[in-house]
Image (cartoon, rainbow, N blue to C red; front, side, top):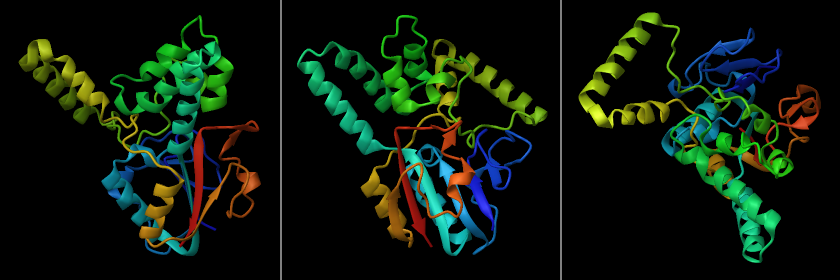
Length: 269
């Protein structure tokens, strides 16, 4: 079977074909998925992607789903994991109502859920308000945050944190292009003067860390059906139509859920 893991970051299985914008490991192929999926029609048995899809804008997201359909074999399986817009909104409303009633714990959790809901879409620096919040020495709701975002809470303790998808980043290994790019940035900053900070903001907004769209079980199911997928099913971390899923360990790390605030959907070509 041909098993394809797209936008794998550093979490992949050696028996899969693993693709990310940068080569993040020995078994990873570097490729820009905005250029499509580099396989012929009806060639792949299974496609998996986790916390990749939300980093495409709506238009590119539709093209990506069409590409998944194109390269999958008939009866091939697509598994998508994304942040669950519905779950985040419900949690926000729950903590809001409790906060209005004077619940002190809820008021603390409310601060976090607002950041979780908004920060990755509007942030202008790596880690955004999420990293500022978690690195606060006086944090009192660490367990709540870990329950919400799992191992990502530990990643955010690293000041060099960026999201687990890098497919929009520029390839800095190309030294000449990198030199030209840096020259252009410096020249633009000279021209902009006091407004030069806009260059840094604009550059950051293109690296792929921001969420450019979000999905719930209705919108993602509808999109898959519109792209001609059938048997669209809501599932979870532990269940899949993918053969021997329990042995793949892609949604778990050391038995713990990678992204607890996720939506899991599968579909058949």
